[in-house]
Image (cartoon, rainbow, N blue to C red; front, side, top):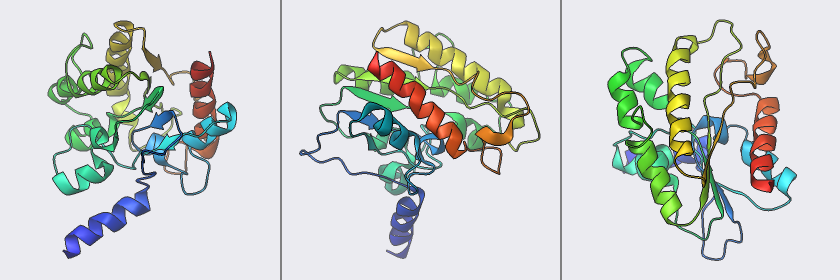
Length: 224
């Protein structure tokens, strides 16, 4: 029981986020990991930036540290498994990201071919990510998949993950090319070389500035 309460407290601390009720008037849902979840408590997350730009409510269920290939049932159901963050609803748009934690925690971004293939195959047709995106599309939502956040080219704990991040982006872009209702948002041009202002002090997570820009870019796709 103590362990269960610990998981609940951790989920609340890290930001598993907004409940989804039958009375929810939001038509936009955000899922994913820290790229989405960070600054949620401060009102400066990607979802908050989207709400400001679109002038409509956005439901955010993203969780810091979340993955796709996550097997623990209790914490997974609290959102540490990205697919478990989803709640069926009358969503027009589902915005999501993820995969970086699977590669970083799962294989240290080294010899990751097998892990990458479990996430998404080279042609973008098979794996946990295409399976989940297909489920969202089957329920009628358009999907925006937000790509990998690059480092500014200075020492970072995830600097060695750059090749894997690029390959993940390539595969998700191929997935998006298969369906006009799936939109891939690359962040490859977001961070100028040597510019630390788009990252938090850890040089892993986005800064509030980056979250605002990512939210703006997502809002542009939805507003077209």
